[in-house]
Image (cartoon, rainbow, N blue to C red):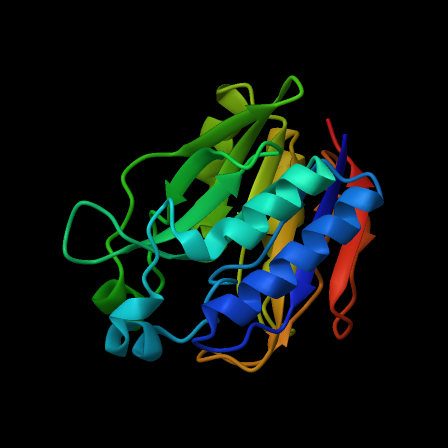
Length: 238
C-alpha cells in the first residue's frame, strides 16, 4: 500500500479553509496512488488552544457537515484521510481527536489523544481512554497523537494487536528531538512502519517544522517532506 504523509500551514481558527487544503491534498495524493493520507495534529483548526477555548464553533461533530469536502475528496480519490481537530465527546470538553475518513467517505475510526501535553491542552480537551485502530486492504493501523508517542507502550500495544502501520499526527517544531529519539525508535523497537503528519507555519507552540514522512521497521527514513514545502511524500507500507 502507498501511504502519503502530509504537511501544510493551517489557518488558525478557519476550519473551512483548512478543510479545503486537506481535501485538495487528498485528491492529489490519491491521484499519485496513495490509499491513506495522514495529517498533523489539529490540522482542522490550527494549533491554538486559546482560540479553541474561546470559540465553541471550532469544535466539530463526528458527522460535521464542514467535513463534507474531505469526505467527497476521499470518495473521489479512493483514499482514507487521517485528520485531527477538536471533536465533541460525551462530556463538556471536546476530545483532541483523530478522525479516519474512509475511501467511501464514512468514518472508519475515532481516536482521542490519551496523553495531553501541558496545561493548555488539559484545560481545552478531555483525555482519551482507548487506543485507536482501523483496518484497510488487509492492513491494521494504529493511531497516536504527538505527545502520545513519547509513551512506548502505545506502540507496543499496537504491535501486539497485529498493527503494521502506526500513524502519528503531530505538531513539532524543527528543533524537536522526536525526529531522532521517538519516531525511528518506535519503528525499530516494535517492527512498525511509522508515519508522521506534521505542520508548517506559526502556532501556539512554535513554528511547525515539517519533516512529515515515514520510517520503516528498521528505523530508517523511507520518505521525508523536508522543513518548508507544503504537500506530501509517499512511501510503501505493509
